[in-house]
Length: 156
Image 1 (cartoon, rainbow, N blue to C red):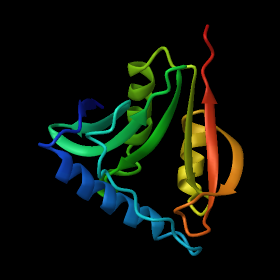
Image 2: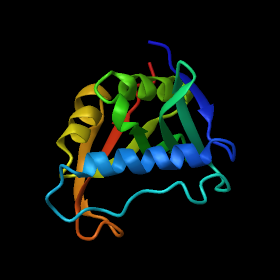
Image 3: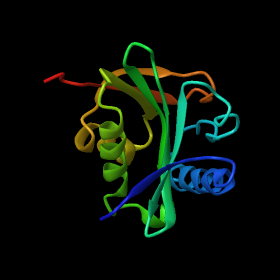
């Protein structure tokens, strides 16, 4: 399966934003707890130290990610989404692998996901190699418990 990463820019921002919203709405339908606020790409194009990425398959956008960079090599996966019409096809795992290969000097990655999303937790822990390091309520999540995940990179 071929996947191409391209920067999100003003030309594809609206498509990426709409896809992110569809993906979030679909994923959150499993939550019976209070739902966190819907993520947005507002301001991401102007934010320094951030790479908004779109994933394309056969010329069609199928997902995306937003990565922020720490000067010390400790990076954050702010968002990762797959269009709800393309889930369960291995695209998310392939996208994550491409992101990791694109930033080989990373020492670690952090991300977070809602505790009510077992599919996301399974994906990050069992497919991508993250470890749960903390469970907390994060501001902007309306009391939703969030799993804070980290992946330390072995320098060898």
